[in-house]
Image (cartoon, rainbow, N blue to C red):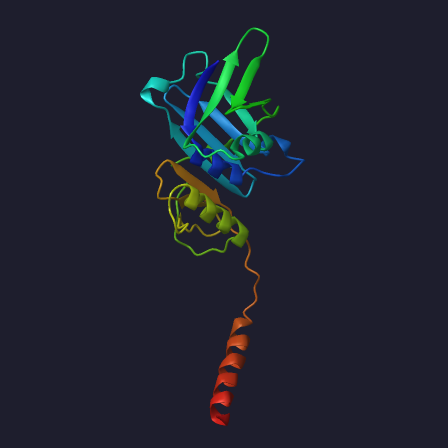
Length: 212
């Protein structure tokens, strides 16, 4: 078995964005693509996407038998492998033989999800992904997940940048140049009651001041 070592932070971050939808079981994990000098991790739930480029050390390049391998790493295998795991790198192992392939993540042996992952590369085509700076609104829970990933990737405050793109998918940038994402906007709730609330609070402040 040949083991390739990637930084744990990328796997932890990718796992956040994997779907939990039982119907779309084929995205209930992280897709792994093995190249000679790097591994690509991709996860999505249909409304957001995370991608990380995991460079391999020069003494750990993928051998010919592994190059081109693509598989979907189940979320439960990721969870099991990361319980109590504190090292900065984790191994992905692939053993190829005439009967079947054997996959490991750290000390966990897993069976890849049998399904076809969405064609996510259509979404990240540099010729189509842009940001026109038109304002948009986003699901606060999704923003919180990107903030969590940002912390894992090294930004202590959980900051990240959104390339506002109106009604279109907006690109997400992190301090870590090897990771990025996409986020789908949501429709505004169309409620401007903050004016009434602010007005009442302001009047209440004035009345309290007059009664002192």
